[in-house]
Length: 326
Ligand code: XMP
Image (cartoon, rainbow, N blue to C red; front, side, top):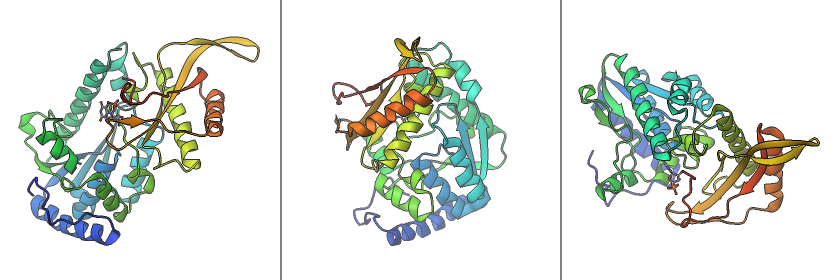
């Protein structure tokens, strides 16, 4: 398949158009892959999930999915990947619990870019170890989408999602959604029967909660990020804000402040809530969230999340601040 989207290609906006695309891709994938195996790093994000579902439809058990739990995923994510792909779609799924491995490597590391590098390198190492255990894999599935190709042409970012694999592995790429825009990938995902909560997911950084546990990651503070993020997502969903706010999450900085609980002094972390709107992630605005909802989230976080005694709301647009805190 060429890397250029033909002018004649209609934007996939309906189930009918998605079904047509799926039928074409299933045929092309079967022709490309034959009876060989395809390996896919399945994070549970929109793009890799849609590619997994397409490949399962085309080649079933010839697809080997590897889901690496690096300990920096959101609450319930590894469980959802296992439920949807292994239990419901009967996929060939290898689940790798690499939580200790990642968190041990990250212990004491506070520089944000060093944290990113460690997470990226460790991910490749784990993935390659799994790849080397398998026989007959000649292809690598990837959730490359059209903006990745356009941006890599402009030199903005390297487009290979699993970059840096050793050359001797020599995989041929299978990239069935590489000519699609994000909204089309979501329509195709729905037509393939993936759950709404997976297909409509907000953007989530590769280094995951690691960049929201500011500074050197500790397990207890990481839990505070994960639990407060789960509360925020649950309450935004209940209030109908899912899909209306582009990205929303919590951050737990690595400092403490004084508080009071049950008549006793506490010394605990703050949780910062960030909720932003944008179209391109370059220029970002803060829109009003009803105070009533913020109070509800605050009360739940203070009640349910261990080690927290303050809740703050980040009012800063981008620029001046970036979306993430690291
Ligand atoms: P910033 O913080 O640069 O974020 O305003 C812009 C968008 O990119 C996401 N982001 C990342 N995504 N790896 C990723 O895959 C990263 O290291 C990373 N850092 C930020 C961020 O969540 C936002 O959507």
